[in-house]
Length: 166
Image (cartoon, rainbow, N blue to C red):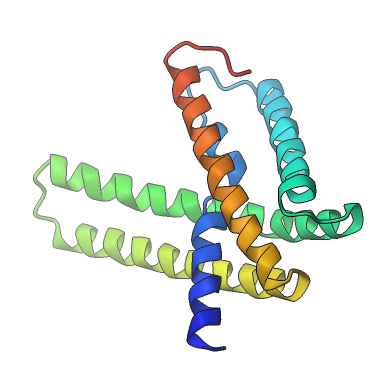
């Protein structure tokens, strides 16, 4: 892998690293599984439309790429939750001004391991997508994914402030 290919793969991994559904599906006290399912379905449709229109994939190629992205989704969520758990543990230790060095060590070790596993997972996902897409398609996917993530993050912020999610 050339340095340019590696840089491209890392950039694409960074864009796809945070799964799209993760932006809008944070569980709160009013978590509703039905709403979650509806939102997930809408996000999948947005992703499909993005792959078709902005990346320019035909129907079959879009479905294959979606399957690849979905294949890694569950593991991404699991690793993200592990990292969040370890960050929370560190925050609690710091807030309580604890001197439990072993607890700090365990939380840091767990966080680093989760981050390493997430990076390894991103690399595998990028390798697989690199076999399916041309470099130009990968670039279009990166741009479109970045734009869509920004839009979704904006909508989530609006929703949390009491606005509608449409």
